[in-house]
Image 1: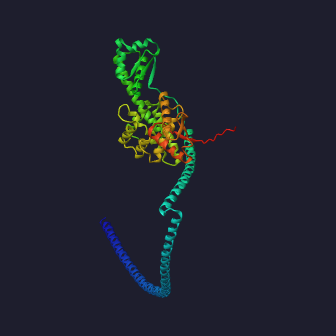
Image 2: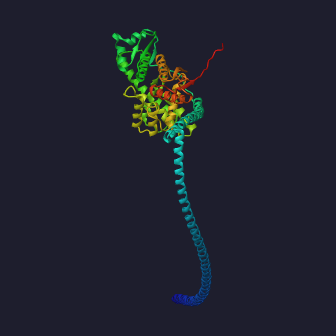
Length: 518
């Protein structure tokens, strides 16, 4: 048994020694193979480097050859360019020499002409002196023959020429004015006619009173209240006069402030509908109606700017504009009139090729001052100008407000458009009503102005004061003088009267020759 163990151990040791020797031989073999490969790689690398050096030297030589060829070509090209420029300079030098020679010849020619001209001038001066002397002798001879001095003859000639020129000028002025008036009237008539056709407006006149219907006459007593306390409360809170006895089953509200009148009307309608009428209820209802009217005013202003297509307006100015809903002028609602003027202004501006949006803005705000005439002193033009200036409106808007009634001369096309649109809106049939007495007084004043001029025989105001026909004396006023007389009459009418639209001044001159055969 122990021998077997030693045999196994000896075998194991021999096996381990054989494995170690095999591993050592393998390592030495691999090292030798690796060294052989490294030597081969080094030889290959050396060969590649040598080939690269040779290739680089070849490329270098080729590049040097190409560079030398390019330098040579550029040198040849530069030499050719220098040669061409020298030839061009030589040609320019020859041309300059030729031009100098020509200028010298021309200068010599001019000097000769100058000498000739000076000689002729001296001859002309000599002849002029002779002519003047001869003219003086002839003039003296003519004065002796005519019996007039030269100054007197000149004055007579100038006078006759002035009369002739005045006559021709008057005739020419009449022709030109007639032609211009015809063309301007046709153009204006077409534009305004087109604007009127495109603008549709209501023709309802409004009044300064409101009527509130009652369910029965018994309601009047409840409105009056015990010892008149209810009616006094209503009149005190609203500032409106209640007229109860004139109309059956109705109460008339009278007040020149349309907003207070509207507040009173709404309050009365609410009180009548509710049936509870006493001072505390009246106070509550009036306050509620006042808030409703303020809301209506704001809505009216917003609706007006929306209807006219205007944006960017101050909110307070919109509220002031809405107040015009309750303002009338000769029975015409001022807000509807302002919207109408804005639309007409925009249409006319479109036809004339100017800013239609700005024209509508000017037309809408031209009467803004009428919204505050109850609270602020002054004309509605000045009030409107102050309001527009306060809310930073455009200078064009300010000028249109200032000039729409002719207080200042309009100096822009839009201001003139607003004037025309305002006149059209005010003058259309049904827009306004006029007191009969004022109407007759205006016609009478118009005829008095026309009759006050020398040479006028009769004058007639016709077409509701839109035209005045004047008969002139044929032996006093000539055809040429009629133009000047018409201008003078127009100037006096414009400076004296206030009227909507325009007045046509029509002068008529007639010559008659009457004889009787016997």
